[in-house]
Length: 108
Length: 119
Image 1 (spheres, rainbow over the protein chains, first blue to last red):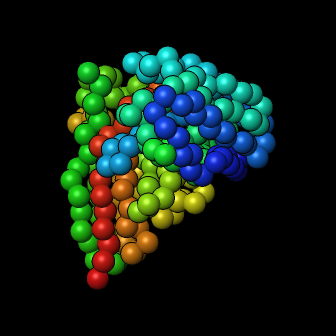
Image 2: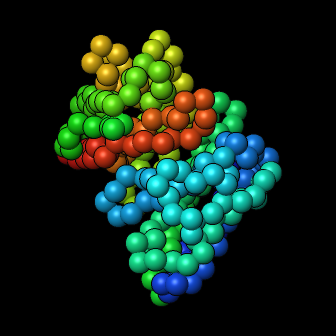
């Protein structure tokens, strides 16, 4: 099973700042199989990025994804108040899906 | 509009059985895989398994194989997750989610079903 490790666990930032979230895989992951989700309290996860760098429908362009192999990054260029949430990376490999443990982006 | 609507919250005792549901609408239910994801209180997301309603082909995470059963009734566009004997450790929010076509991510999610197991 491919293990995804996200860092940092918590990111404390102010609105308007840039957020950089990391997702590292225990073995190489196809970029096509890497996605990012946002989850706010009391809500279901929402797809943000798929294929490592493609934004899902309706996702603002301040969200961007990059990376390949074992290292992937989600960047939020300028944090808006509604962006404070938990973010999960997810991969598919060896007939199984796995999620990272999440990064919480909180207001500083 | 694609929607996945899950059944309501459940409170059960250890040892009881349970079946929760996820009804799809706004798309061809038989043409997309439906996955189930567990979220224990205050924790992250865990993939449990996935089913293709068109032919009921089902795959399980090794962590959940034998612990739950995933099924679907394509005649009513509904997928199910069931337990034969609940444990307190099954207390969690359970989400169904649609796998996007031939890709490997989940593009639509249900609202979640909270299952509480307590004596």
